[in-house]
Length: 252
Image 1 (cartoon, rainbow, N blue to C red):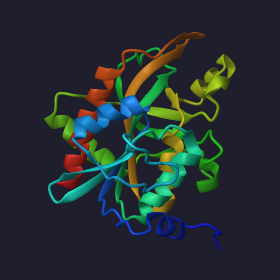
Image 2 (tube, helix red, strand yellow):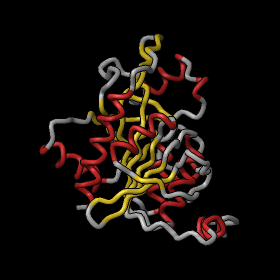
Image 3 (cartoon, rainbow, N blue to C red):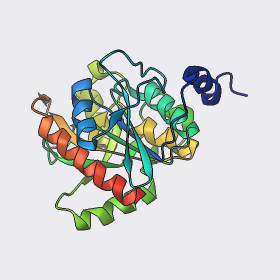
Image 4 (cartoon, rainbow, N blue to C red):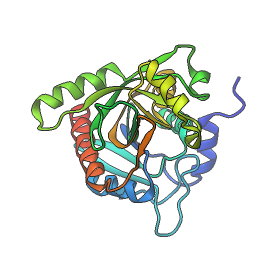
């Protein structure tokens, strides 16, 4: 028995509002400004009320949006910033709402010399290096949903863009990204790090949702040097365009 369930929590949260009917969802693992670029690219419209845990609506700042692809409806959730626990909560609640596909769009730090800033990437797999994911799996590595990955490969043949497939690792504490930790992750085969890929895949597998994380290399942690994030706007727009192509392939 679980003490708290998505069904009970969402029912109490929605009150008189209708339950969103989303076939897919986009989780924007970006700041409000970065999320805004994604929302604009999707031409998504504000839903106007709170749907998901921690995604509070305030005047002039909506976090839940939606748009249509044919007859399918897609929810777009802004500002999914805070790592494993938040990611798992959102996956659990979206699964309860009937979402079948989740695309996470974000940014990652490269720990491989051949992955420079601006590289558009898809996480083919992720090492289980965070605390949240260990609640969902005993495995040491989790993987992108095979159906979505196949759709990406087919879509790539029809589009000018290419995604580099990478192995990710999830870090719980951004200010503890030491050279020792990064070297250890690289020795395990990780090429990029961020705060959400592994729990996204681990929670999705348990909840019966197909998910994929795509995005771009925003900064580099290579040879004990940090090349910081800046001028990410065009990278974000390109990630959004790729995400829209993938969604169209899945839903049309």
